[in-house]
Amino acid sequence: MLFDFKDIPGKECYKLLVSTVTPRPIAWVVSQDARGLLNAGAFSFFNAFSGDPPVVAIGMGSYKQGRPKDSRVNIRETGQFVVNLVAEENAEQMNITAIEFDHGVNELEQAGLTTLPSVRVKPPRIAESPVAMECELMQVVDLGETGLVLGRVLAMHVRDDLVLDAASHYIDTPKLKLLGRMHGRGWYARTSDLFEMPRIPVSEWKMKS
Image 1 (cartoon, rainbow, N blue to C red):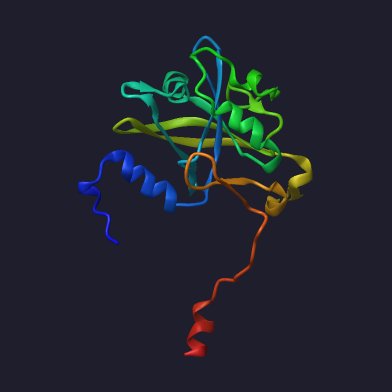
Image 2 (cartoon, rainbow, N blue to C red; image 1 turned 120 degrees about the vertical axis):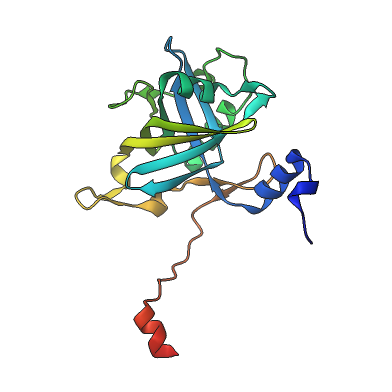
């Protein structure tokens, strides 16, 4: 079945993308405005796109036409934010922060979350999250009602029991038990069902042929 996007409304293109590009990692973003008012939101148009420099990108939409989400407004205003990752144990609290509260409502308080101070940026990190990345804004690419936020990672916090070897920067990734976003409005995936498939060196492949 061919879906030619030039003939499909934007909302339907969105449905096709989120139904097929799965699972998607979740950026649990904490930001604050110039007055220091905190905001937290969850975004699944998210991933890491460069290791050197370390860059993450988040697609942040709008509540409605002409009104960008508070996270995007705050990040444009202050140039700083924290990306927290979502573990299975954080699922319900993350879902609460995704509620479209009125402007000025502190989602962290609504979800019963606690914060810890960041080192390189002003917005705090979520204490309950296993991993937090302190970021500074590099660029916002405007994509209609969506803004693609590019952030440089300045520092990363990983819970002590999830670090295998700090000197070698080895993390116990399976133990993070992160959630991934799936299709529709309420489907998620666990990352605990894994299998290993080593990369094939070209020399080994040539020997088989």
